[in-house]
Amino acid sequence: MGGLLLAHFWWGSVFLINVPLTAAGVVAILLLVPESRNPNPGRIDYAGVVMSVVGLVLVVYGIIQGGEKGSWIHWDVLGITVAGLAVLALFGWYETRLSHPSLDVKLFRDPRLSSAVGALGLVFFGMMGALFFLSFYLQSVRGYSPLYAGVLTLPFAAGQMLMAPRSSRLVRRYGTKAVAATGLITVAIALGGYLLLGVTTPIWVLGVIFFVQGAGMGSVMPPATEAVMSVVPRERAGSGSALTNTARQVAGALGVAVLGSILAQVYRGQLSPHLTALPASAQTAATGSITATDTVAAKLGHAGLRLDQFGDAAFVHAMHVTTAISAVITLAGALVVLIWMPGRSAVQSGAAQPEPAAEPTVLAERDAVLAERGTVLAEPARPGLATEEVPAGIAAEARMES
Image: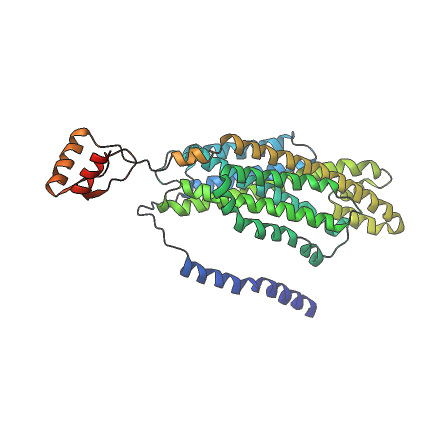
């Protein structure tokens, strides 16, 4: 009983660490974040919220079921996934019919916003999928403790902290399109770098890969977020922020579901041929995950050492297949950004243009008024150039000299 109370106290203390950090964040928001208010906020779109949640839950659940069953062509897998996609399609159609939708899908008509949201989604798709299977790699394959495995991910955060503050300078020099595409390519290279990891690879290699992936994410996230917010009107800044956050959360969930399902299926296929000597129940349990394999191996005693080795090799192979697929998807995202995200010239062309030159009659009337006041224009008015009033005598001398 005392041990249970101690465990509850320890877990409670872990979560209570976040309380002062959250309080400091609230104070900082109140003091530093400028106010932006929609003068016509409208009502909450309850139906849209429910449809989006139901659709996403069905799609993610269907993907996970496919990984557990080893195939995505079962009717109970396809049926759930197709039902989820149908609900999401209905949600998209429904949102176009509302004046105040929970997700304004019409915003995606702007290629700057849609490509930026895609870039954000892809970096989180790769990040969450990678962190999902790397936690098993570090703890089950390499044998590190949860604390040490967490410490090993610090280079990932360091890469983001290094590049994120410098991304704005890069955008000013090269443009959002070039910076976002380069960041996605960097993330893809890092994902491909996981192919170098094996059972005995020096752990510093993983640290370098973490740093490169974090640097790539730090190059993508700020400019992509700014691209989204630049499209959304200021009074709807909350909608833009919600859009970027939704893209990150949904992509992260799909990354874990899709890549985790692929990992589980490949792992099962690689390990099954080595389990023929075990009872059927033990074979089913061992192929559930690498942690399940370790549990079965521990029950076998000395004979379980060989099963551990098979499990580690099968997991590393499954991890390689999963990361290769993720790298290809990320590279496709970089290609999408290069093709559809507007370049710097296209963005600048959408800025405010100078007012057209006034008609000749208007210019003549203005010159007459200025002559009565003893001033004339130094130069004939030209579009895009500011005019300056000078004394009439100086202007006359300039004309005579010319």
